[in-house]
Length: 527
Image (cartoon, rainbow, N blue to C red; front, side, top):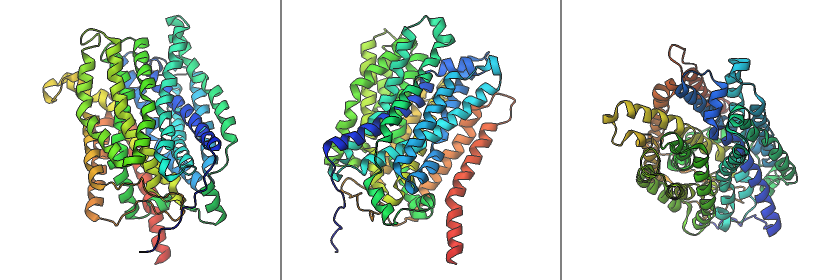
């Protein structure tokens, strides 16, 4: 057996290393802040940008607009992934930062429905799509950029700093909301004060932009560029053959899907559930979640570092299994401490949310290192971004809407569900986490020992197995069909054409074309 090639990694000094991590993390955190400020203020946004009369419909429409940002994320991965693999990692996530910050600022000054009518929700939707595109290009760039600067044996720990940014972005958004809300009367807050958190984004983005402009390009990318080894068509390389499709679908179902639903259940749905189901008031809900996030965030680093020692797969699969087993029992415990279900106890609720976020840190802490290790350097930006954003964009991003719709159905038909209506929405993340555990245990390879600094590193592509490929493809098709038939109709008011379904089907066709057309063209050239 030939000897493995020596690593081409050249260590950087500690100050430079933490400068890279800090600049990448701060920018990514601000993009998450921008993205989640919308969801944290969903009920207020609904009252300003959608026609009133049916508060539930308005909230669903807002959640649908929120989900539109997630739906756009995989397309941002394709667009900016290509830029990152062809032009450079640094350039791509500078552009995404500006787009995200600009869209958030415009939401803060956008006139409401009473002023400009239907243009308000349409413009809001366009801005959310822009945010989704930007975020789709941000995460893969930050994770790849940091991973290509750090040593192999500490990759889980150092990339875990990037993993803290989503939670910290949500934390900062909640903190800003609480500070602004408590600084003014309730009427002012509901009338115009809610816009301030959106407007503050401009300041945060400017600071981050100045910091990121000082960064240098990834040394591995610079070396590959100089040697002419970068990809000229990263999307086609990432999706252009059945082996890569099998790898992508394995990573999606065996890691990203479960991570996504655990993340959004433990942090975002917990917040919505406490306020709408548990009847905890606005300020108390956000205080509970913010404190829990602050206490649990260091554990991203703990589990990232643990994955360096015992492997990524063990940590992530343990998190998915525990989530599948414990999510509903934790919410049942929470119910007894809410005003709606028992005696209100803020400390107990904070402990419950903390336990949920602890599960999040297990599945999310190691996943950046895992994703980077799965794919070759020449298409790493694109390949990392795609399964991550499909998982988080669809499985996670649609969770609030799916859970709300399932809970509403359970309230109307309580006998059809194995749990009480207030817990019915949790069946979705529990099932997905369980599926991820099974597929991950069976199909995922351990990646923590791989050397990603070798430009010849081929990732974890394995020999194509038709049975595995067909099974994963059928599962994906079933998920798309269920979304089309049962989820998307909830976004359309009665009597109106199903425009959301039309757009969704068009997006599916675009993705298929992006995957199949390059393969067909390559086949013709070789014929």
